[in-house]
Image 1 (cartoon, rainbow, N blue to C red):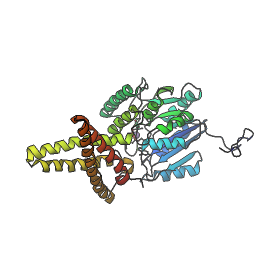
Image 2: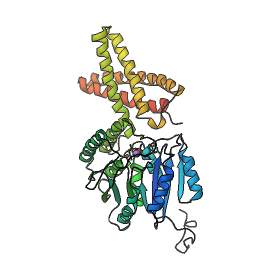
Image 3: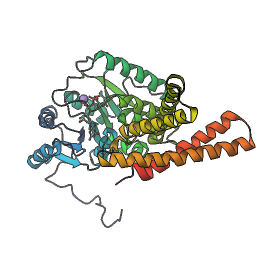
Image 4: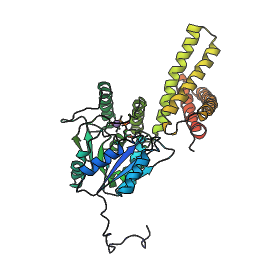
Length: 378
Ligand code: GDD
Ligand code: MN
């Protein structure tokens, strides 16, 4: 920063503004009926603390941003970041924290499932220097659940164990969406975080490699009052992708891993179709193989549109033209795959090495070209 514009030590603090000590970041998507209730609850719980709240809304069709804007007009502690053309929970949280300037930032869901009355306690743990990160945990003693069904609780517990083992994450509930962190520490780690996933806390803790001193406090995960959960079954795949990306030390991006996982599913789809064609319908091999390729490409396209590129999901006519473009990209990818496999096999006649090299070439090609031509950034 230019010395001339940097506020020097002689610059008096503005008498009329008390800069906030705590920024509460609330990601929202279709939470119109919840935001005002949350705002009122924050106001009640945070009495005596200088706070602000940053709602990060991905242009919700229900106009959540409109309700937030109206709150912001009455109370300058409320801010609304309305993002257009982007979707994603992690990205929204990251942007909200980076848009704040207070020394501590909390992330809390808008749907009142998290317990905002814990915020002052979380703040005092950070402010007293006992921790860099405080997590609202659903797994430690004292935790009660109202809003979690059995099936989801089981899946979540299993995923948590996997993540803790593989990424050497020590905290009990790295899947929590409720936490508070020192902004300076977050700012250091932010460039390495993935904006695509759902699991911002897991990403943060794994990226920190044990350098964040974490404290956990139990809270009651409540019932959702209005609207519905946005986390679908794709979250499981998303989670596996994040674990793999972190294991590779972020050399491989989460998006590429998701794309490659979809490719793996495509192989199973291909072989299943081939089998059905040959054994059950009894068509000639060439036809069964072609059918397998078309079915697999189509299902890969649909899965990628739902998972890998969910933040840029194609709809309507763009979906059809995207599918055709995807066929073209994959066909060229297949040529690249076979070409590389042949030349490797020529030098070193090891079938699996040649096959794997070809497949890798194919997926890298398909990924690069899909990003350029199918799900291109507008
Ligand atoms: N800006 C933005 N963009 N916000 C989003 C998006 C998005 O794409 N998707 C979801 N949100 C917001 C929701 O509006 C809500 O405020 C919050 O993120 C959580 O979304 P839910 O759809 O309510 O998720 P959940 O209740 O199933 O899961 C939550 O709780 C779990 C347990 O604590 C999330 O916080 C999970 O991350 C967490 O594991
Ligand atoms: Mn929720």
